[in-house]
Amino acid sequence: MASRDVCYLTTTGRRTGRPHRIEIWFLETDGIVHLFAGDGEAADWVRNLRRQPLVELELPDRPARHYTGTVVESPDPALRRRVDERYYDTDADEELTDWARRATVVRLVRDE
Image (cartoon, rainbow, N blue to C red; front, side):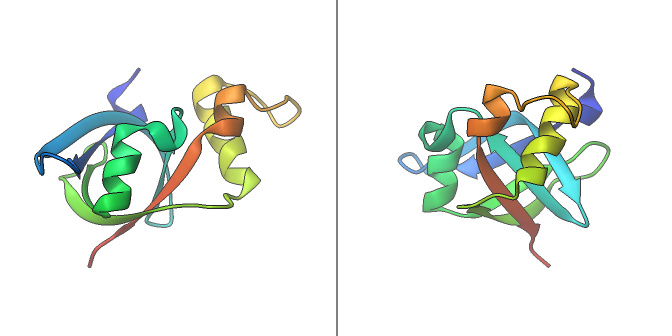
């Protein structure tokens, strides 16, 4: 995976209070970043974010910045389609991959 295809998310551990950094796929549109948790609500980073929504995000070729994250309860199907096309090389005529269909979507907005 090319470095431009991933970002680095750091959440605060809900039990330890220590930084928890992961590499993850993303979509960025108009300054809003969407992340997709294939493990859904069970993903450690999603549970951390629910407890402490202030996170640090490092996008390709940019310094780390603070964002506030929220789990998107009813994500736009177009987001799922875009992530599927980007990472699984599907096209608009194909059915979504199982991963794209079931992933929990998180929206990150930069703190100003």
